[in-house]
Length: 472
Length: 97
Image (tube, rainbow over all chains, first blue to last red):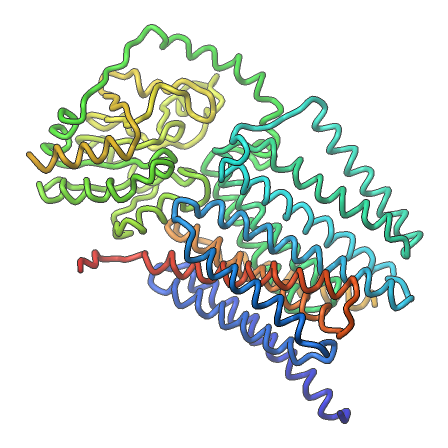
């Protein structure tokens, strides 16, 4: 091929990358508003297609058979996963996809290391630095996400897993990684040192994720989302490819924003969320002060009576939590709301930012059940309304409605902004039993005079409520 | 070569600022779709994977590259499709059939 045509092609590829990056940015912008979100997602997908098509024209690619095999397998798996996944399983799905992205970036960096070694020149120092960084971020993203996936899928227990000296092991491994990196720079052609670095990255990912408990998952998932972007960026540095650097940076930024929002919603710092499992034991004894409510009694109610209260109320606010997701009760909840509206009751939904296991978890479930999104209210919008609300119906939420967060300085969740359901005229709490929430704290809401407990699985109880309300 | 690193760094930092500006103030309703959509974008690693796996010889780098292509494609295809599936459900008014 002659050289003019050659440089034309190269410029063409770069321009295609520019187009793709622009499509990503516009797409992300449009993902920020419900009216345009779907188009935004489509634009981003088109951008991806443009980037891939342009890359296939690159001279570095001579053989397409293996590439076709990889793309076909990946597409088939991706299509099946996207169609089969239950909306309640969305946190696992996102977690798993994060991990795959991170894994791909790591493999790209590894492949580049071997390619440079094979052609005998060995990676230059700055190239080596980017490869090491890429392997570190990608490796942590991969195994961290897989552990998060396993926890959300309940293959692993959702409680924090800690072992003695865990912190020291992590710090030791980080030290070992640094030493290994220096050694590799001195001896760039030694694959065994490189493989040790890969292994340490993977172990660090596991150690990062196992101490994180179920309720802190929204933070962990957002952070891993950010990592998956940074991993792609790092791979971009390895290959000196701006397309990867830009896209990765965009995702990295979006993940960081979500992480911040989640931390703020729990009034905790990021280090506190990531490392709090280590100091849990100390907090447990502090929460002993909650023993003061031990001699108070709990009032329970049966579905018929609860249905009566709901049906004759003027306004009802439904507060969904992880319990609704576990029981897959979102459709039954929607039906209950329909029946109540038929009776002229005003129904709203109050969504706490960290309800569920990932940012926006409740919103997706309720959308699946066909609840129009203007009926969903954020914490700041709904809190002033509770005092005018006849019945607050709490379905499988616990810590996010615990009034102790507002006034009990001893409580581990002190300072976390909550949904102030205790201000409603009555509160009905649907719960499987008197188990404590994730934070391991007693919920004094359950013992208040205005609170009625309705025991049972969210789905069964709500279905019974629907049946009873129908008869009103 | 160090020049390339600096240019890359410039691009990275500027793109991060763009990201922060564009994504700030997304309503909570869209947090999950934003996450899965941006996650699909991080599958851009597929471009890198393509570049390292098309040499025509079956060597270790090529094999690693092809595995990377498969993983990243799952990320891309699964991510965009599932985001679309979710967004399809978000409705302003009740669409009673």
